[in-house]
Length: 468
Ligand SMILES: *Cc1c(COP(=O)(O)O)cnc(C)c1O
Image (cartoon, helix red, strand yellow):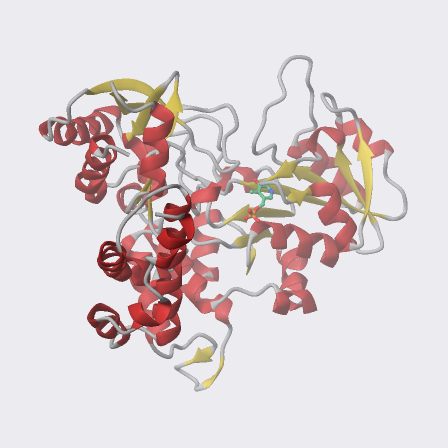
């Protein structure tokens, strides 16, 4: 058979569209989707013919028809989908940071489904403020005098700089000119805000006196930025917020603390060092403090500005606030998350990030064992499953250098390389993101939900049992 003859054996698009299967699919999916799926199937078969696979007309046609439904499903699938996080990184920026508490999910659904009193005061029948749904609880939980909330912490920092220091100078340590998440760079945000950055000190050492010496009649702000994703060790020194506040008070300069991680829970009291609670940070006296909503706070993406009334109040009325304002779904999720903080025990039980950060090792181990037992029960030939001690990471620019003891399921296959197993899990359904360590595939049980144990184990069995 010549090569062109084998291409000629492939079914045409119109032939496939006329099949009983395609007609059935057309009754539930838009025509464009079905046509695109037929093209995908035929294109894949062209590649198979080119690679030397030979079949007769009927063989190709029936194979094509059998692949149609899956191709239509793939065409209709949303690209953004749920993923099982077995990496052990709790606040994983690429995996969407904080999973929401069920209470927050329900609040989002209810706000999304119909109308709400978003900006409507039901008692007076007059226009209300969308911030009214979160400001009271934020003040209570953090002890701040005034609060403002925008889209994310980058926006919060930007608004603070634009609102308080446009056309003026902001003094910042060279050791804190950080880049966070590949797109938030302090010097770039500063430039966009219209403030002039005045760098002081060196990468490893900056003293309060360096800030004081940099003061001119154009100085508006001392800015401290939390080093969220790295640590500096050795011969180091930095000015404390308290020292800057003392200078700021006497010279009329506002002190801003970009704290980032935003721990409302007292992680230090739970034995996890590295992330000071927002309440404690604020008590150091900074005039304004900025945090993310979806890092250690465990809520939706948001930027929260906390501080003195005369400093934060004007930011709420700044024209940029309209461009950076929170959407109602975020607001619903944030309000429901904040409510859980009224009781720390409830916060640790209900807010996934707080629970994962603080879950005692025996509970993590029990989950790892459950996952392992289910995989072992499937008796996949050549598969070795062990429960091993390892370390999780808070992640997300929260506590650099801090690790949390954890328990992982280590999976090795006699016939499939760890990297290939990792790829199969990642591209499977449901998608599972695991980590590789010393040639082994590790599934960290700390970031896996109990409800995911069975599907996770099944995904591993599927990946390890498949031949290609
Ligand atoms: C994470 C972080 C930011 C950026 O916050 P987003 O919520 O990601 O916009 C800014 N500053 C610090 C110190 C951070 O840790």
